[in-house]
Length: 397
Ligand SMILES: [Zn+2]
Image (cartoon, rainbow, N blue to C red; front, side):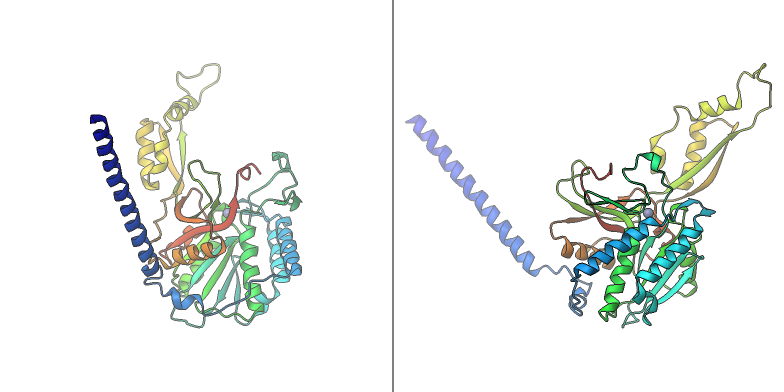
């Protein structure tokens, strides 16, 4: 009997537990359902109005797809290499300018689009919207690429745009001619279909982003500032869709960069009395420098603001004979807004979700730097994202 009674109590207990669990889950489900139906994701954004004002067919004919691919390959084949801040391949940049005008005739002839060449090879496009009171936004991309040498283990020559197993090989395919050609191709199609935007926007194509954008982006920003332009937000390259390439992240996720790391280049030098190699001093300048650097570099430095890096380097070395100079550097960029009221973030997020419903969209921090940092004075929100889909094996490719 005792045993039976214990079993019965246990059974009753489990029954209560089970019902409590079911009840809790039901309530949770109900609340979630009610919230789903009543929760206004557009709160404050007035996107409801914005979303359905124009319906433009996104259909591309097979011929249009063929042209699109051919234009992209042509862009890859022009070696628009930036070697240093003062050494860029100007003849390639001129050739690239010609390509853009040839393959996007509507963009360059439309009375709606104002086109300006800035800093000799960069481009600024202004597309005025129907409602001039709305603050414009800006799309950024860059034309130049870093040097590429076939000897560095390329499967196909870096400016061949050769297609192997469905992949196009070439310098600039993902950094950043896909954005250049994608943005202008989209505008070309929209203009063909008689589109006029509600909100004004700009497109900025830098020609020296890989070497700090001092002639391209910097001059575009100067021009916009002189015109009193303030931007709602800026969208540049940076992060992408990561699908199984980051450990701990299951399923594909679109990461939108809301900030980027700062940078500091520090020069260390030592001057000491010259001597002959047959009578070396007890400590040579190279020795002093080596011990200043050796074993003392600290990964923590990257987390500090650029102006604090100098103090940190000096105190880490703690040797007055070593002269420390800041060559160049800048602080990490401010964090752009990414809440429900953040217009730019929500527009990008919604667009990604419409195109790829299977994706999780989340904010992230960009490890690299782009031209977008030059825009920080004329906008509060800078986002860094291009819809490239990275899968395992792609980083090696
Ligand atoms: Zn880039």
